[in-house]
Image 1 (tube, rainbow over the protein chains, first blue to last red):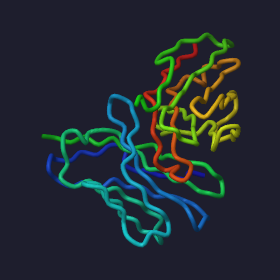
Image 2 (image 1 turned 180 degrees about the horizontal axis):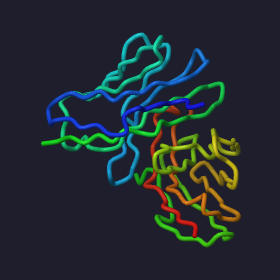
Image 3 (image 1 turned 120 degrees about the vertical axis):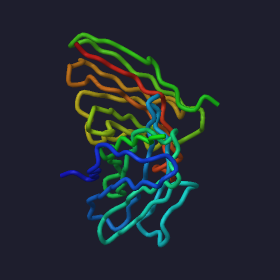
Length: 114
Length: 113
């Protein structure tokens, strides 16, 4: 079964606007971690943000915030004030201690338009 | 600091050939990982090493072996390459208690014909 689902293969956003990238997950663990990575066209993977399942507040890192809705099993990434350099693939991922494993979604390609 | 380095950057193999992908990190991380990235499938964990001397299977270990040579180095070996192993391979490392914050190498693009 798919553990991480990113339903948006591609997204477009106007420069300076906010954009939300969707991520839903499936786990029976009570303790788990959710995170987002960015992959520019150059290919490297860049860690953006992390949310623990017991964290009460939504994680924020600069222009990135994670909209964590535990009951709905969603962990959407919100990018505020989009910049041209935000154009990249974005991957949602989850770590479950039970399996000591990490699973990534298929990714969303974000294009920021000037 | 170089971070995580991988060699080679590109490789073409014939079916049945073997090769070893090398990975090294200079951040004194305990944990290291090997992933493969296929189009439309995101990254999938092949093997990981929580600490020096230990290795564990990930989601897609078949056809691969790994060696954690020391704290710095974690190699991935394909004993008999198959076209299904055509992919981009990423090595990553992290602190033991921050597995979500992984630092990735630049990747190796492998083609098996």
